[in-house]
Length: 95
Image 1 (tube, rainbow, N blue to C red):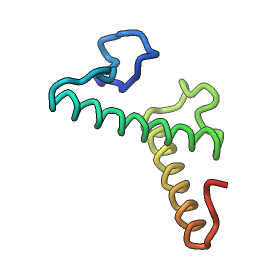
Image 2 (image 1 turned 135 degrees about the vertical axis):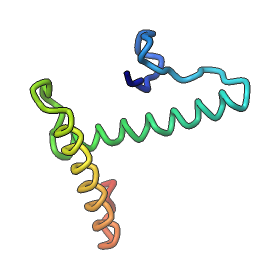
Image 3 (image 1 turned 120 degrees about the vertical axis):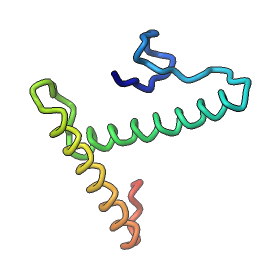
């Protein structure tokens, strides 16, 4: 069974790993820092999928999990290629 990264807005379930709100030890601080970084990456990826290609806006229960994974990775790679191309052309990708 897998675990899912979450923040404080989700209920406490065994499969949801929430960040440590006030880490005290070095180990807790490192865990909280890395978890936040990974969670941000995932949120950005989903934002790209939703905004640029309108993927995952509708129900995906009928899709195969492997196919969904391939679609998501493809969209993220395409997005990164577009951003890199715009950067080299002198276009601001943020605008």
